[in-house]
Image 1 (tube, rainbow, N blue to C red):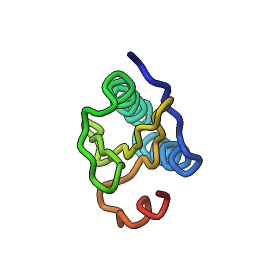
Image 2 (image 1 turned 90 degrees about the vertical axis):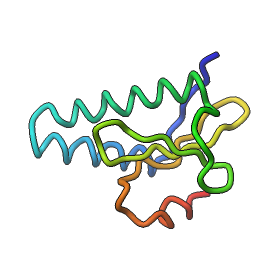
Image 3 (image 1 turned 60 degrees about the vertical axis):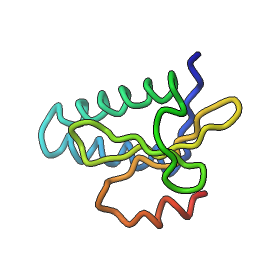
Image 4 (image 1 turned 180 degrees about the vertical axis):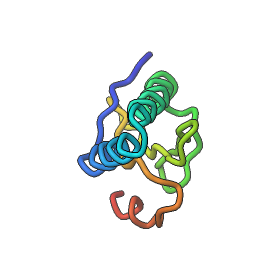
Length: 98
């Protein structure tokens, strides 16, 4: 069963910012980043509890080929994406969103 995936406003902003940054570095790279994120989101929607909890009930999925994590919560009727987060950033930033 596939569950609906919903982004928090901050997570959508992080995704857009990363996409734009990669696209400025090399045309097409931003689209490749978006494809990799979509792969992770599809896996999360199909198997929401596949990834381990890393903070309270927040789960973490790695984005292949990019130094990013998708941090999310499994709610009764949806998956809530808390952050699209660069692995070198301070985790207290996304933890404050819980």
